Amino acid sequence: MEERAWAGSGVSVIPEDMFLTWLKIFPDGLRVAEKNGEICGHGYVQISDFNPSAKKDQRSWNEVTDYGYTTNTHNPNSNSVYVVSFSALGVGKKLHLHFLDLTRKYMKKYLVGACRMPGLIKYAQKKNVKMVSKSFVTEYARLVCKTAKEKDKKFFDPVLSVFASANGMRYFDVVKNYFNDRDSGNWACVLYFKNEF
Ligand SMILES: CC(C)(COP(=O)(O)OP(=O)(O)OC[C@H]1O[C@@H](n2cnc3c(N)ncnc32)[C@H](O)[C@@H]1OP(=O)(O)O)[C@@H](O)C(=O)NCCC(=O)NCCS
Image (tube, rainbow, N blue to C red; front, side, top):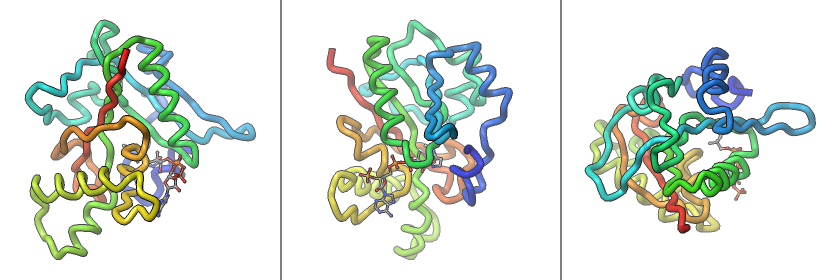
């Protein structure tokens, strides 16, 4: 499933030992979706701190998630549910709803995720922009988020639009060199949901 979801992206899939580590660190943080006996999605979250009023966090995926294993970054006492890994084949939106429920179940203040933007580099080429700057990426991410709920989805991004269209998701910031991802130019867009207790 992972290989199908990431096909053609050039991004490495999650290795088996990482899934096994997650089951030891925070088993309830791993959700697997199944349809007709076949796995069609997975997501894994850790508990870590997030403060939307603080200085913007420019750490990479490796830094925020301990290279994806979460061994030293998952802290049950922290205030937020942070999406570490996510892939889906047609159930992405449903899986996202599970993590909103998990955020409520654990009474955490925020659900946070850094989204890929695989439409970014194509958009830059269309605009004849050779070097993408933070302001250009911010403009793209804000346009995608702003229009994500519109019917014609004029600025549709295959990943960011999916999460930005979910109710309550808010734009936070863009992060350079979040992880190696050719089509997003290694940029990611952080979105968050505030849990209203
Ligand atoms: C991003 C990802 C998780 C989305 O999951 P998914 O199962 O495809 O998502 P869903 O099917 O629930 O929703 C996709 C939505 O995009 C819409 N969509 C897809 N292509 C579209 C297009 N070209 N134009 C407009 N809308 C489009 C679908 O219609 C659907 O919206 P709807 O439910 O309102 O009809 C999945 O594509 C994936 O795993 N990608 C590779 C891994 C990855 O990038 N993970 C995220 C890391 S941040």
